[in-house]
Length: 307
Image (cartoon, rainbow, N blue to C red; front, side, top):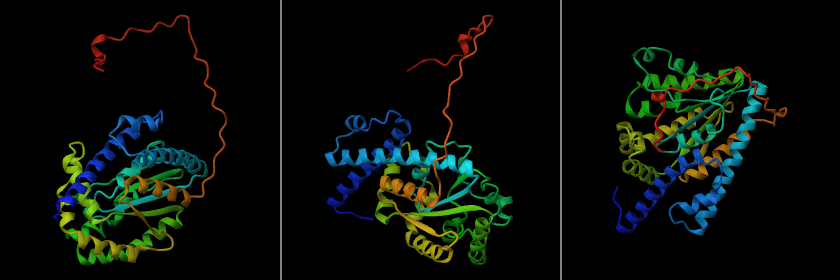
C-alpha cells in the first residue's frame, strides 16, 4: 500500500498515537489512584480536546468497570451462565476490551478461553468438542478470545478445512448454539470491525513496538494479503449464523477506546443484572499470643531491593 507524503505523515502520527495507546493500556492496569489529569500532564503533549477525551475515557471506563463488578456479583448470586464470543480481524482490539472487562473481576468467576490451534488428537474429534469443556458452570462468565467461528474465518480462508467441513459447520452451529441457550447459557457474540487502513496502521505499530512484536504471527501477515477473502468469509458467517437465540453484534472498532466503552456498555445492557446487597464487611481483630515469636527470614532467600 503506497501513500503520498501527506498521507505518510498522517500514518506516522497515527502509529505514534497507537504506540501511546499501547502504553496507556498498561497504565490503566496500574492506575488505582485514578488521577487522570496528572497522567495526562506527565505524558506526551496533548491538545485540550485530547485531554478532555482522555479524562472522559478513564472516567467512563472506571464507571463501567464498577458496573461489571455488580454484574459479577449478580451472576454469582443468581447462578447465571454467560458465554461471550469476541471475533474480528487481527489487531481489531478484541484483547484490549477483554482485558478491560476482566481487569477488576474475579478470575475464578470471569475467565478467558483463548484456545491454540487444535492438536492431532483434537482434529479427529467432533469440531465443537474442545470448546465444550470451557463452557461455564452456574455463576460463571466465560469469554472466548476467538471461538468455534475459527472454522468460518481463518480455517476457511487459509484452507485448513474442507468444503464439506465448512458446510457442516454452518449446518451444525445454529443448532449447537440453540442447544447452549436451551441449557441456560446466555450467548453473546461480538464482531470487532476495523478498516483496511486501520489494520495497516496497527500492524505498523506492532512492528515498531518491541513489546508487541510477538503479537505478529506469519498468519497475521498473511491475513493482510487475503483481506478481501476474509471480508467475504465474514459476510457469509454473519449471514448464516445470525440467529434470534444468539445474534451477532458489530462493534465499530477503529477508535480503540470508544470501542471498549461501547462494547462494555452494550454488554451490561444485555444481562438483566441488579445490585446484590452485601452485609458490611468488618475486619476482625488480629489474635496476639504472648508466646509467639516470629522467626527471622534467612537473608539469602530475600529478593534484592533494586528499586
